[in-house]
Length: 450
Image (cartoon, rainbow, N blue to C red; front, top):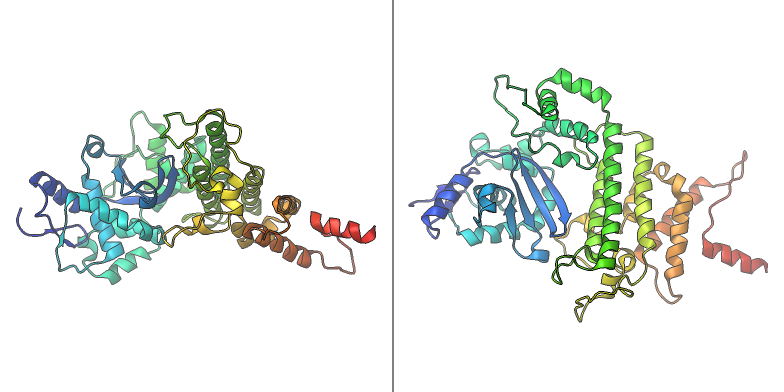
């Protein structure tokens, strides 16, 4: 192969160091016209990763290189049958290269098969800050936007988001499935036709897919469904599913503690760090139900209060697990000499002594667990939980030796309660209300009157 190859972004690539077969595959992938429906941040037993969902069943996953090394996978048949880099990975490499690195378009970049995975992994830390705009950026072809980045910015900021009605249909129809979340619903329905002609909306032997296609392409059908399956209903069902996933994370930790690794000593299972990271991820997903659903309408006060209830339930469960989880196990555990104590205690890992993370870690991994999210909510959404929050503050204080500084979560939560009570329980001429009292305050009062 002679001469540089132009990707769908307009960038040029030198493939001279690749074999003819790999070069042909790279050329096909970089020049393809795929569409990204959604980019999600995920956590699994394999580690943290970003999932780039195409408008077809394929999904490319970029794993956190800090956890599992440089690793990029695709769900397509080509990758699964042994190819290290498939056309979808080559296509995503070109798109991420243009959007996140924006190299000079006139200079051809030397590429080899191994270098593609390495370069994609190197961009992992930049993906989180552009999750919402990446689908539009990556789906824009070179012919549509040329090499002018100002035009690309207009597409990113456009109020019409790719497949927005399709995402709303997934949101509505997923309420009828007991476990699947909107972003995973109906990915086997196939690509959505975008031609000007009216598509064939009937999907043989698949009622859900037929309704999905009708809702996407027929506005009257969509509006009828939207009136019946309201944003509140979708948010409530999704919240229940995320709550179930949090309970499942606790249950998987308990199972691992009791039974040990199921796939041999190299299987970490749902140990404390993995459970903690999963809970942090789920807290972020739960808060997105309230804050960041790109197509959501206004939610009722009742749904917002339920979000706070689920967060406090998770916080309480973590506080109840302040113990060395492995001290009574009857199976042999492979322990590193330098294992931190927090890796044996879920409360310590999440609240008392969380690990320090680098600048590339997403914000939801670095924030004070749950407490920062509650502090961002209006008091009306969590005031009915004031006694439970007061109990959690008391519980954390009981864990502390007198000479130790309290964890940040305790300090912030205590201040939040004090600020609320100072404002909500000011004396008035019409009534006198009683403020919630923390346990150490009650002890101080008891000593004063003895």
